[in-house]
View 1 (cartoon, rainbow, N blue to C red):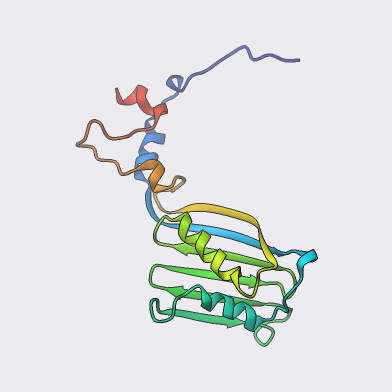
View 2 (tube, rainbow, N blue to C red):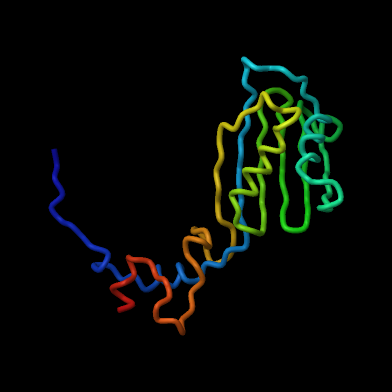
Length: 175
């Protein structure tokens, strides 16, 4: 068994460039990816591309949000299933159904809100797709400046405010 002989602290490294990158992040949106699988023991509803479309349309309250939905299916490409693209002011979604028991959903909004994504998918499956359940839910921040953090985690940096938030690992170069 090997034991570590050298130990290093954050202060042992120059954190200037990482801090610049950290401060340069500008959030522009929130991406949520869902994978839904049909519970084989609960197959209760027949699924078709029209059922998937109805489920997608149910997410958008009539008259409140203008949404454009494009559908691609067996007439457009070879294979089972279908692809739906939906666009609205403030976001977009891509829904890919394999024609059987799997749905991939990619949701982008210009507002960081996991709550919106959770409600979106819950409404999508509520009526006609109740035998589908979430098997994967992943979230990523989207933006410029090599965004790796959500805005709520980073905040906005104000150089004129000495009490502005900086990460703990950068305290040695700031003080």
